[in-house]
Length: 123
Image (cartoon, rainbow, N blue to C red):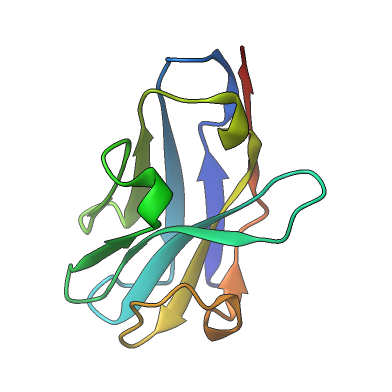
């Protein structure tokens, strides 16, 4: 059964780093585009980063230079490296999958989601 499972959330001070992982069982990266999204308290879910099935990447403008998305096809694991974290990065982070090519941050275009992992950044 295909499943997305996120790991690596936690609490960190501002300026610190975290690396999130998403084990994407049943989602071969050659066929699926993968995304990271986040949902902060009281806010709507927003796109963070996408790595399309061809390996091309897309980032939210406000996060460019601090966040990096990558994937390991051998282990079918998606990663999100987050550096210089800020309190406004506090949110639940979700990985998502969609069959085919997807480059845009449209949550409705991603039918499959993980359960999320919580990131808390303190000042």
